Length: 172
Image (tube, rainbow, N blue to C red; front, side, top):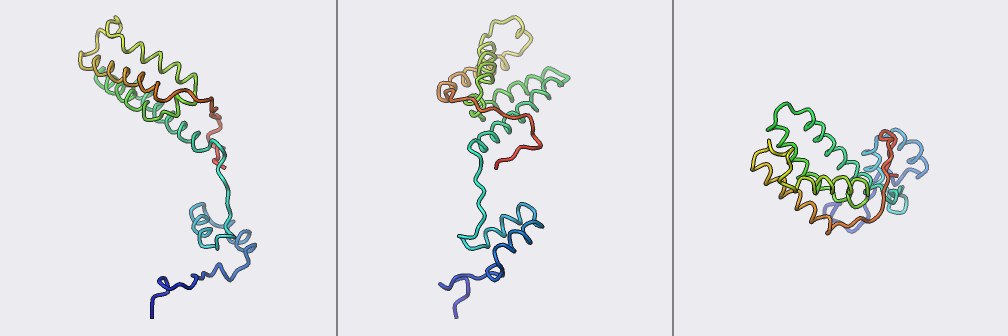
């Protein structure tokens, strides 16, 4: 006899014997998010609860993630005690910013500020950068030039505003 999972008969679960209303209102209310998703997958296709994402939810999440990561590096750089650590964190910022093109595609202000800073860092003859090592100056210039050229690949599309209510943010 073939195993049950290999047979062509539909798989039955305990949920198949319970009324759908009872599952939704009596069982789901006691489950955490992951358990609710798993239980929902056990229901027949036509009985599953669907909650679509808001239009820009994924985009907002990517922007929020990028903002959080870059902000944490900037705070570390600001609080760095020695110039070597500060220089390494500066390079890390310029290596991290291009990983989140959503930030400069959907925020005009971010795009403007970061592009202006990149242009400023590509000028090697500035007096305020005289204390930086030649390697740091060369690498910073290369990273900023690469970022400025990537702005052409990722044009500004439209503004997506991020709300400040981080605790109340929801994708649905």
